[in-house]
Image (cartoon, rainbow, N blue to C red):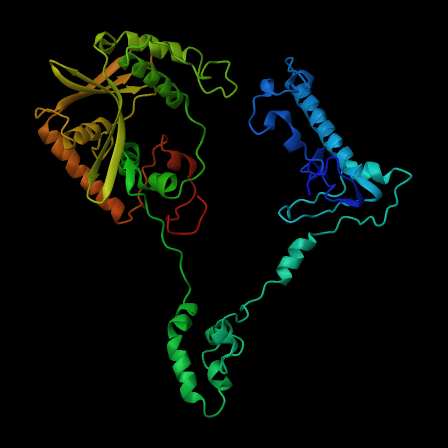
Length: 454
């Protein structure tokens, strides 16, 4: 029965269990069962808005000091838990039992111990302390679970329990055979050789499987790849392995990457005929993360307004494309597609530094143009694809013509790259300082198939 359900009721004997909590450095309870200030915290009341609660007028108010506000909320949460404790202890007519423990199932890593409510009750002169146990060196729950572990497991199925040859079960027999293949034959009673041979033959696959070290299957790349991931593999297969196949922790987003999303939102608003409002989204110099230099957003927006694209009719913005290459699906998102009387132009907004072309010839906009051709959305003469750099003092535009021959070459290069990926070739690395993998890993020559930490 919960404490709330017990309101208005009385019992001869009441046991309030779980008055346990850890202690923070400042002496406040943490990781508690009762009190559990995490549940009573008004900021976490099942997602209900703080200001809409009925008791909002009695809750602490934020006046500019976050630490003081947090302290006030924790005090209020503890006060709510104390009210609940009052309801619990006043249900007893004759005997009230309060218990606490150091360890609980589900929290075997961190001890708790008697919480503030138990200690306060223990200090009262009318309370008799039956026992006060010290903190054990390790969790007895963990030790109890460890004592229940048994290998090989005991027989459970009826045919195992009644098996005259393997009374300890098939698992025990397989484990014995794995250690000493001739040991089972020595256990066979005289005259039961034929039955033994039949039993071994019936479970031969289990014996063979148990005797072979099972190697973990090699991780394989996903069958759906983004254009960016394809370009990463074409440049540096080792970087692709550690960012896509077995991803390492990624660094925080670069300012250019965060700024790019702002410019993309600006263009998308233009495509919808909405005002050119730019949400800085915490990118300014006063951002706690310090992810953008001062004036970076404003400079990019000013450069965009100075490009010819700002005077063209609204484009198709943020166009998603997916096309198949054998067993692979390659997807991407085109920043802008301008369709005019002069033809089709794809534009990718760049807010970082200019980069060198991919050494294998694959190109981001080239793959986007190939995708549009595969989807039947490109005219026979092809298109123009332009990289528009907005992060400098002035806008810079790098246009490229993609005709039928150039797109055929992109298709061939893409198929070759994906074939190398299919073969599991991850040994080559580019060694460029801009490569995420090569810039972080400079001291190991281990191949991805080896169990190493790069």
